[in-house]
Length: 481
Image (cartoon, rainbow, N blue to C red; front, side, top):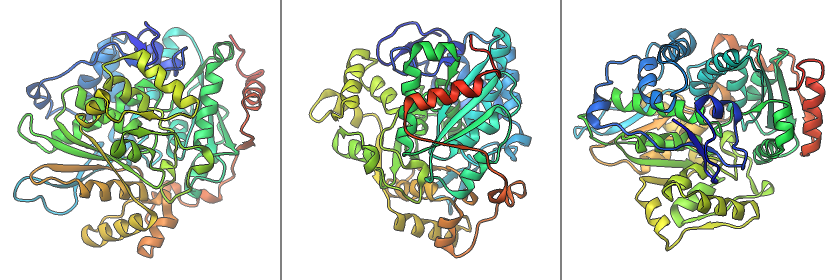
């Protein structure tokens, strides 16, 4: 399997090449030349597999440059009960009783990993596969990433102790929960560098892309990515859609719907990828908060990036995003892999113009793609957290509440609705306490983490300042190539 760019560059190389490179040289995102598909019978035959072995079946067609035995070993080392505190890895929990017609509402638990967020599901695999590929090539990698809350801690926990990897992680200064900040800033390992940027998440993301656009700097300092612009993350996330569907034990080919809290569109795109591979996904619900650029698109046909000063600070902060990076991958597939069209749209986006598909064949394709959307508010989140706790004895975090609320709006008789969990409620104690009047439980290993010594740097929103910071920290640590 070879990879291409959403903006036209051909032959980006193999899986291992795009794993290490992050953005394509032309600024686009890596995509496989083709998407393999499975029949309902093939998918149904995977029901008895462990999570790791299911991951192998789903991911193997996209990874042709790692020997089968090695890939199985990496996946089995990743998806363990020890790492995810559950034999099932991603338990599927009913919220209430299933209806007599076979429908019902379900919560897909994705937050049992080291950082208590769904990002661990892919990031733990990245830690193992980065180490494998870098060792095989005798190379090193300096990861430059951006986080709105959970990607940062998931990446840093995955890369702890990795001798060939350094992590430079940008986060929006003062815009994460106290728990999220403490998770990242309390890590003092020599290969972890936390940067609190004076701006919002989109500024962090734009800086990452700007630095990567400097081909000489990127090559000199071996820069890579762990954000969902990294294809390996999206691919690994597609696995839990298959797992959730198979856990329902539906007849082969019968549909299930999914509701996904959405900010940067990576998690939703992983579901769309699974659907494109043949998983019987009926509706794929894009659940947004007040930063609802994606809801505007799926309800009206116009995608208009929201500038940083218009990105609201909400109680579901990991979704406080005005520019959804993985949306480019989705539109690329909607066009039938038309890279020139996709490139043109993203030139418009870069110059502040909207992508307007109203009245076009592309809009018809969007409407046929199974994606729908909805928006919720702080009051909606509080009410949903309170109601789920009262009716089902289950505390959920505010992002998951967005997904549950919007998912309920789109429930269909006889069709299961699976709501994807974003994080454990302990990561957002203030909002949960406001909703239910008590603090959520947290794992013992995180008791008192807010009081731990913190190490981070506050930097202005400036490309050259970031480059200088990277250069200075790597001087004498890893000689540039």
